[in-house]
Length: 638
Image (cartoon, rainbow, N blue to C red; front, side, top):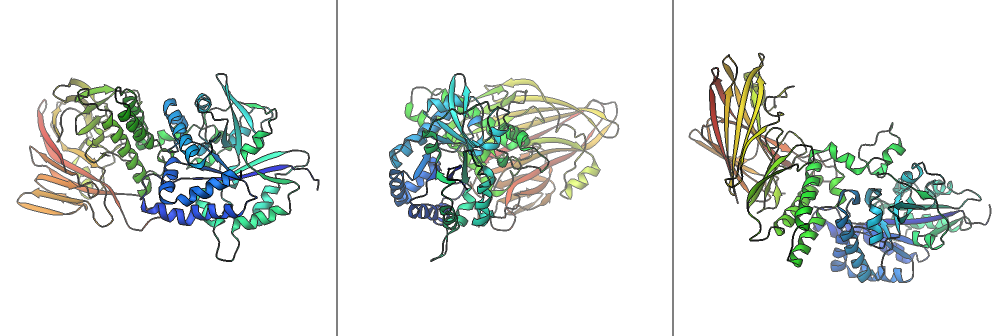
C-alpha cells in the first residue's frame, strides 16, 4: 500500500426538529440524539465534523441547553467543527421565491455568527433540492459552496464530473462550488463498523485523490453515537479502525478541502433532487432520471400539497405588498417563512398520517397568521376576488372576510379552502381532490342504499361533482357568487341543470340550490350535497356531534350515523373548540361518516379522526321543465 492520501473522508449531520411536533418531544430528542452526538465529538478531538442546523433548533438549544452552545463554540475554536448554513426553517429552496431564499439564509447566518462565533461559508440543501436560479441567491448571501447529492453531479453528463470531487456551477455569470455528498452511506447503523469501513475503503484508488462526504441521517445518530457505560459507541469503534489506515484515508471537512483550490470542472445541473429523498422510489427507476426530477414534480401527486404551496405563494405576495409598518412586515415574513419548512412539502404520498397532518396544520397556522398581519386596518376590505389560485389554468373565487376566507373552485363548484382566523385553521385540508365543502351529487335510489351503508357511491361519471361550474354573476359588495352547471342523470342520460348561489358572512354562509329537469321525461333521484370538515381530536377528547331530528335530540362523539328529517346538525372540533352547525330550509336526511388518519407506526396505536364527511340529501321528483330549490345554512362559532 502506498503512503499517499487517496481519500479525504468528511463526516457530518444536520440537527433539526420536525415542525408540528409537540415541544415536549424536543427534550427527549435532545437527550437521546443530540446530546450523545456533541458529547462524543467533544472527546474525539482529532475527528473533524460538519454540522448543519435549522434556526428553530438552534433557538431552542440556546434557551434550554446553553451548555451545548458552549461546547460547540469550543470545538469551532479548535477548528474541529465546520458549521454550514442553510435556511432558517429548512425550506426547499427551489419552491420558494428568491427574496425568501435570501431572507431565510441571512437570518440563520446571523444567528450562527452571533451564537457560534463563525459565519458559515457553505450551505446544506434539504433533499439536495436544486435549480440553477439559486446560484444568484447563494452568491448574494456570501455562500461559496453547497452540499449536493453526488448522483446529481455524476449523472449531469458533463465531462470530468464523477461525483468524487467538487465542481463549479454557473448561472448568469455567478458561480458556486458543488461539494458531492454520498447518500448511500447516510445510515451507518445499517452496517457494522467493520463492513462500513470496508465499503468506504473500496472508494480508495491508487494514484487518484477522491472526496467522500457523508451526512448521517438524524434517525441514525442515536444508534452510532450512544453507548452503554464503559463501552465504545459505534462511531468510536469506526474511528479505531481508521487509525490503522491513516496513510491512505484522511478525515477532513468540506471547508478544509476547498482551501486547497485546484482547477475543478464546470457542471450544469438541471432542476432536480436527491433520488434518496423521493418517497416512492421503485427498483426499476434509474438514479440518473430520479436525480433530475424536480421537487415540484412531487407536488402534483397531492392536491393537499399543491393547495398548501399555492397558499404559501399567495401569502408571499400579500406580505411583500405590505408597506409603512416595518415591524409588522418583519413579523409577517417570519410567519410566512415558518410555513416554508421543506419537510411539509415532501409528503405527497404519505399525506394522511397524523404526523404529516400535524406538520401541514402548523404550516397553515403560520400562513394565516402572516395573512392576518398583512391586512392593515383601513386598507383591507372584505371582497370577492377571482384569479388562478392553484395554478391549474382555471380561475378560482376567493371571498375574504374579517373572520374567514372561503375559496370556491370551478371544478365541482365546491369550497376547497375554508380558513377560520379565530383558530388559524383550514377546515378543508384533505389529501383527496374530491373532498371539500358542498360537493354536489345526483344519485339513484340504489346508490343511496350504499350511501346509507357508509359506502360512497363511486360512479364512473358523477353528476355535478366533477363538472366545471360556469360563473353567472359575482356580487362582491354583497359577497355573493352565482354558478351554474349542467349534467346528465340516470340510465336515460336525462339533462339536468343546477344553479348554485353562495352568500358569505363572517359567521358562515347561506347556499341556495335550484335543480331543474331539462329533459322531456320525469326525473326521479336523490340530490346530495357533501360537506367534509377537517376536524381533529385531542389525546383524551374526541370530536363531538349533536343532531335534532324529528322530536329527538342526540349528542355524543363523532361516529358513523344516519338521521332522518334533520332540523340541524352540529359538529364540534375537539382541538380548536370551533363549532359548525348545518341546517336547511327543508329538513334533509343526513349520513355522517368519520374519516381517520393512516396508522403511524411511531405513535400510539388506535384510530385517530382526521375529519368528518357529512351527506345531506333529499328525494327529488321533477316533471319536464320544472325545478326545485334547497337552501343550506352553515354557521361557524367558537
